[in-house]
Image 1: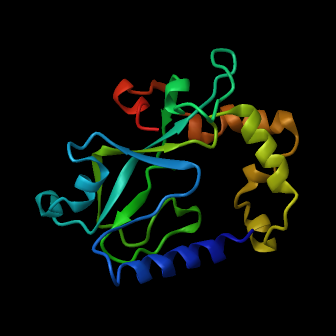
Image 2: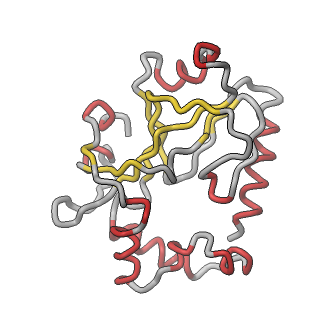
Image 3: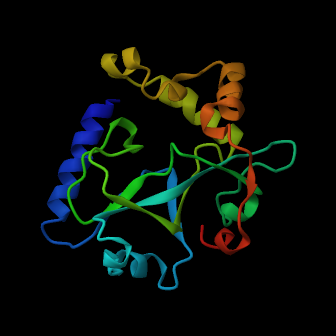
Length: 195
């Protein structure tokens, strides 16, 4: 696994899509973009953004969904996901700029962009689902740790949580990492039916 290769690949493909489309949305596999915008996600993407000062990209309000095993059952993937969880944590790390009308230059992990000029849209939420089920996340981590990793990524500590095979250390990351330092908040009911 190589973060630099992934970042470059995403940036190039986004630039390719912008040759044919006005707006491009990018999200990773463990993320869902949700909106309470009256026109849904399509309406938000097609908005006249000049009312917000003409930004060329939109940042979501990020939240990390966390499985509190003492209160919640393991995730059933054949049912709506957010309806099975009570809590999420506001997260600056997952307040990502993922909707754009120009080519973006991401930092590793896609947590930020170079250059700024974005709008943080109060009706756009990113639900980061890595911590949505403890057992599934731990099994996925053990599997991920066994694949080849880029030596520069390992040296820089990129994706270290995907190599925590000791369950105690993984549990510490799962519940004590900086991403869940903010107090937990109830997931709004109006969003629970969207995923």
